Length: 205
Length: 205
DNA sequence: AAGATAATAAACAACATGTCGTTTTATTAT
DNA sequence: ATAATAAAACGACATGTTGTTTATTATCTT
Image 1: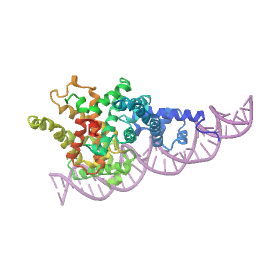
Image 2 (image 1 turned 90 degrees about the horizontal axis):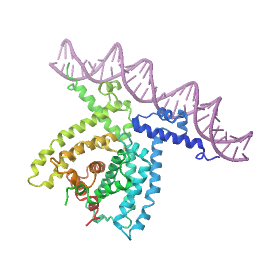
Image 3 (image 1 turned 180 degrees about the horizontal axis):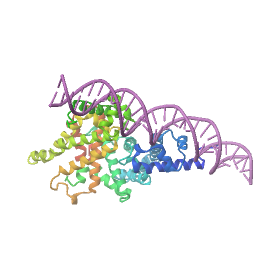
Image 4 (image 1 turned 60 degrees about the vertical axis):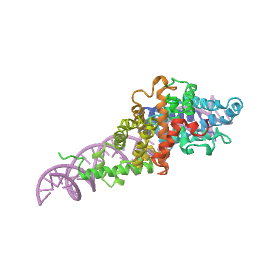
């Protein structure tokens, strides 16, 4: 049996469908998309769509999971390495060193990220992203940098606060269409996360 | 012509449809809802639905706008009064005095808020909520408490950060189903916003 | 109680869905 | 280069939802 994943036609078809999806989400929002829309845009027969995906939700889910998996392998897996490289030298530089590759990844997948996180996107993707960031927050603090007894607020709220705040900044950034570099966004977000939004607003000390 | 808004039948029908909407969003998500689902749950004829709403999107939009309008009239309009009452005594208490009524309002509309902000909810409602919070942030700082020249980060990112962080905490809170009071949530969120999430995590000073 | 009007039941065309079997076309492996 | 193989295109199908419209019934207002 020839590997189905290697056939050029399969690769072309799937890529074409995914590009159509990204374009159509931005144009009319995911809810409004029909399978007919997708296949017309992708220049394939409608029946062909059903060979690869059960329905449009299956397509969306697979795109999201692919993105998150890549994020985990390219960003999450590198966190321990980044920490090991820095902890002897400058422990304060760790958050920056972790965030920059994250924002670089987002920048490379701007199209899909913007569609999924945009005003016509998919709430459940935000949930997946938050779960990813929850992992990142825990993995990047090996041992016990975050000690339960030191917390001034319940841990779930702390994680929700940080994760949502970051997603909000990412959404804003994606709308600015390439004005700020990943490094600049990392600096902006860390100013608010480390010193607090009030300090960043010039309202403290 | 007798006012359609005062007829008992109309009130009953519309209320029934809205309750069906809330229940069905939580059960299967807004996208999956059909008009048939709504009218079956609401115990009305399918044709009747179209007398009151153009389609399910029209229904959703009207529910959202009604909620936001009420928020504006009950929460936003009171901000200047709250500030006037407190600014001579304790200016630091202002954020708390503004947040508590906000969370109390959310608590009173738990059902709809949970459905709209939940994992099967509507992204565009988050956008509307953020716009509301943007207004609240600006209105609650009359004159020039937030001065452009004092900002350490671009203002759009500051607002996005704060608004999204708050929404994240609200989502978490709505899932905890009534464990914390509005006052407790206000304290939790202000600890993080004023001192910063890092400080709240026990990672600073 | 009488008149007004909202809700119902039933039917309609238009359209999207998911699934076929068949034919054509492109790719792979020999 | 070519035969074998797999993918894509095509056309058709039953099914379900949508939004509208009709005559009829039930309910509210005054």
